Amino acid sequence: MIGAAAMAACAGQAPPQSASAASPSRASVPHYVPPEDPYPSTYRPYPSVPTAITGATIYDGEGGRIENGTVVMAGGQIQAVGGPDTPIPDGATRIDGHGLWVTPGVIDVHSHLGDYPSPGVDALSDGNEATSPVRPEVWAEHSVWPQDPGFTRALVNGGITTLQILPGSANLFGGRGVTLRNVPARTVQAMRFPGAPRGLKMACGENPKRVYGRRNQMPSTRMGNIALARQTWQRAIEYRERRARDPNTPRDFALDTLVEVLEGRILVHNHCYRADEMANMLDMAREFGYHIASFHHAVEAYKIADLLRENDTCASMWADWWGFKMEAYDAINENIPMVHNAGACAIVHSDDPNGIQRLNQAAAEALADGRRMGINIPDEVAWRWLAINPAHALGIDNQTGSLRPGKRADVVLWNGNPFSVYTRPQEVWIDGALMYDMNNPRMRPVTDFELGQPGEGDTK
Image 1 (cartoon, helix red, strand yellow):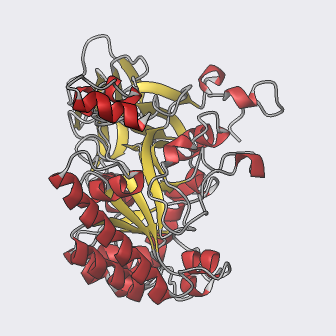
Image 2: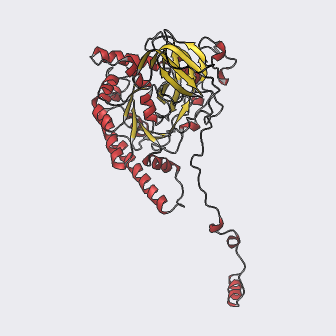
Image 3: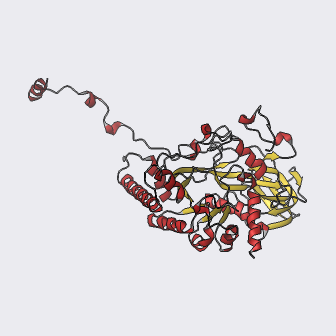
């Protein structure tokens, strides 16, 4: 056949087309352009009515306090905040807030609800893709189970209106986090906070070196942690340069995530306990040109509060969790007020399905510890740790985190001083929609998973 084909060509006849030659040329195949966001938010606020709370003590989330104050919500936004003479629209629902407190909705920057939902069984454990120390291609939102009863418990017991769901900390690069509105929904996209940048979960210290060192795999030391992280960032930079030269460069979903970090479209949230390791991570961020939005579990943040302030990096902390492993050993209960007092961004976070229901109490503990050592922070200023500061770390402080006109009407009415252990949310609004009313059994949310089970509809 080869000889016949050669003879036909020599005779000036066109050779028969091969199968490949008969198919469309590469140039005729449309170039695939990936969507900017393949999993966009479909969140829509629940219906709301104009509402005014009068006579309450107001903490505005940015450090301001108003006695006998008024908050007006309309059209899903904060319309006005002020004293008793604040104008109230005709027809607005009025709530007498005398003896009560009003704050912005509580924001938790570190949660695993939905990824490690209740009940906590292996079948629902989807928070750590612990198959390689570098897994930036996974997205926490693809593990979120919207029916997790933990969401509604965080709403009714903790006044949580916004929360970031992060992958776990087994990996140096654990994947993308997602910021959610705490509303009932069928899909995670219907919970996604519109316009909120995604996060990248990174980890340093004991977790990655323990998980992979036990497998006789890198990293098994802290120097291995940094070495592998640097190699990965270098790959991301080279990948970005290749794609700039040639848009047809095959996509790498892992490196896509890191390139978005380098371009400032994804915010880094770094699990890191020790001061020396946080300093190393700040150096590495400077080396490769990205910014760390917040260190999480930063039990030694008090030692480097000046570095955090200079780098505009927040510290997300517990009030009193410590000592459960060596890197959590040198914690002090005054950590949060000391970081705040140094002018850095202090945040109270949970990393726990129960703790998220009591972040106001955790903040109260830290506040009291600070006062015992002479750091006298007013209550209304301390509320920044639960409101505008976490909103800043998540890149959404222009939309929520304080009671400013024009911001989303995320509001909690507390039935007493919110720093008291006896106080509970009385009513909670998200985008001006009443999502919970402790005095109205019909306003106690129940997930599909809970229907027909003991305790259905209670406040846990």
